[in-house]
Length: 74
Image 1: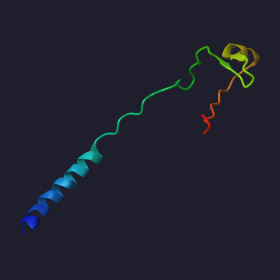
Image 2 (image 1 turned 90 degrees about the vertical axis):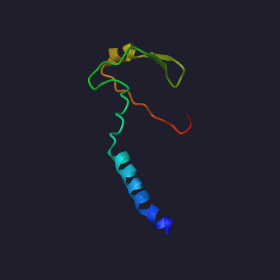
Image 3 (image 1 turned 45 degrees about the vertical axis):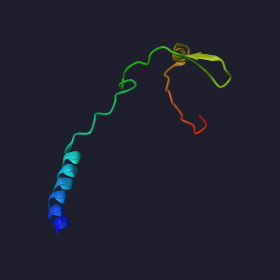
Image 4 (image 1 turned 180 degrees about the vertical axis):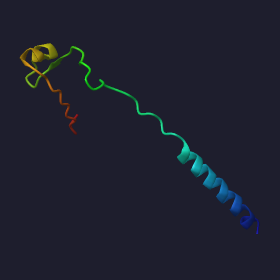
């Protein structure tokens, strides 16, 4: 009998907690990287042959598109 008396308020409490949790605003995603249209900072990286390659050197040849490939081996 006591269990039946607790069931109603307990159910209402769980429902209210669920509604409150779903109504909470999600955290804003962290902004990382460059905004669209911004220039990349100067950098130098190694190529596949261990030679230094700078952004400035590549830009002398024309526009540059950076592509980052995430490998499962990293």
